Length: 125
Image (cartoon, rainbow, N blue to C red; front, side, top):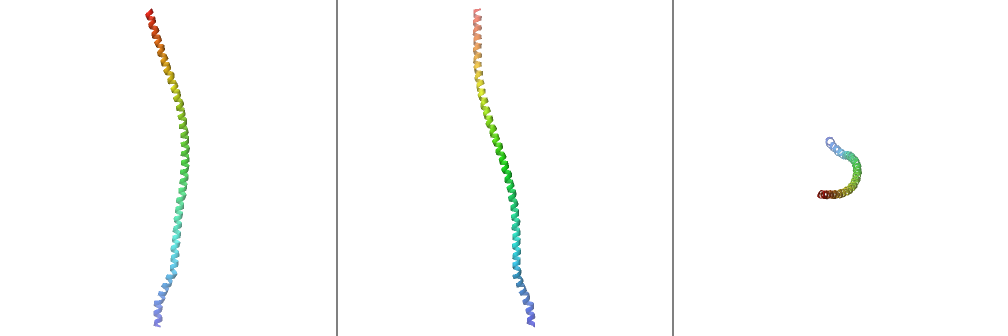
């Protein structure tokens, strides 16, 4: 009986440990994989949140760009209109300057005639 008791005390725990290892190992592996899948799901959710926020930011930027393009178009139209008005005013200014110069010449001619007529009257009188 002594051999049986020794075997019972020594072999049964060893066999139980080895059996537990082989049975527990797949369970442990499954738990690790489940944890990895759970963590991957969390990472995917996190990146999905980032993607959603980025999509909203892109849409806002698209709206801003469209508004800026519209403002630029309006400003360009206004600049073109102002350039046309400026060109018209420049033509009118040039015409007025020509008229002014002709009037100045005419005024000098009239003053010369008065001076010349005044000198003749003074000389004859």
